[in-house]
Length: 140
Figure 1: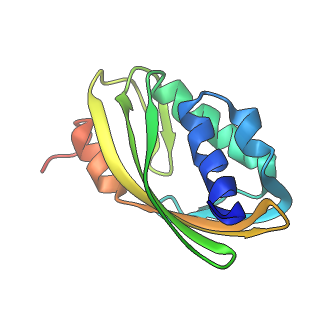
Figure 2 (figure 1 turned 90 degrees about the vertical axis):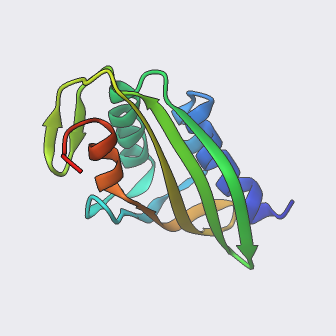
Figure 3 (figure 1 turned 180 degrees about the vertical axis):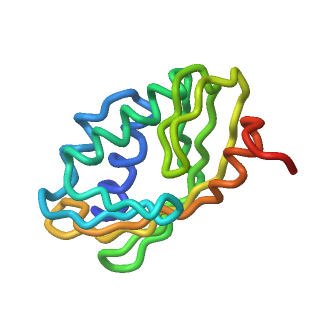
């Protein structure tokens, strides 16, 4: 396993291990990370921890399973699946949604750059309409 793969796995697996400190430890202070679906910048480890708690509060039983990692030099593409039961408030760019009790399972893709053992840049891509549809927040 390359160093780049090791670092991006730590980043993603920390969600499933319920250990945001572990994930934050591999994020550079000046990391430029973007949640593309929400149009939100998540700079540095503190933003990562806030985002972790936002998701964990909405999906306390949530899982994050890495499916595939593709590495080229200092770049990695990580395919993963987030799943869980919506039993807490979900704060999103569309507003805050009260718990629905429904399950959600959504495929994600992260594109990340690692330098000196730290994530310095990244973007998450996923279909937010799948989430709101599975939670019954949108018809269709």
